[in-house]
Image 1: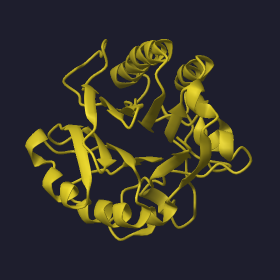
Image 2: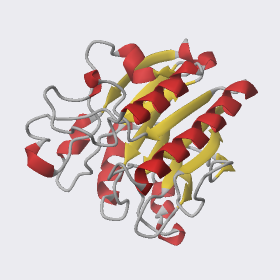
Image 3: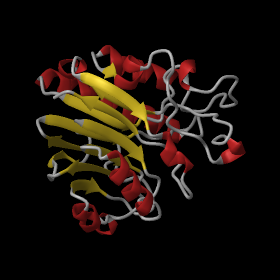
Length: 257
């Protein structure tokens, strides 16, 4: 079971890129973020023609999340966190696919900080961590995949970087991510690539893509009852090199179940 997460950064303008990647990679489950389209603007019919069912939560201009499943329609369970501090923002969707509960998230960026956007980031993170603990307590097999907008450690960003006090690297952001891991979740990509962490994001600015000055902010966390089923993980970085690409590349894992 191949599960991927991809911040598409506007599904309308990059729909052809999405289709090209789906055709090449053949993932079984896909979590998409930053759809940047209203609910009715999501092109589910074209995805169904490729064999993918979908559930999604759109939002005009900003945000938006979706879960795709090959050969079936995901069984929708949630379209927001139970204690979401701002339910007008489409940042979380959850569905069951082939016996695995999939949580797809787009965590707030938090810049500029300090300020209300950073406060919202931390509040959303707190609400997410509470729900993550509830999912663990349920005993269900769970994958939490998405754009966490957190660089967990200095090993997750290019050396001698210039991000300084960016919200993605702030101690409070990293501490919230660590609290999540401390619940018992496994950072799947890190677990399988501890010595060579692949980047998932390269800014459009300052030639960071051609110079490979990347960050790892897209993560797939698996519950303890799935950790032993991890077979492989990686990043399809070739997608970032396509004309008109998102500034993110798809990250993925393979489970034996």
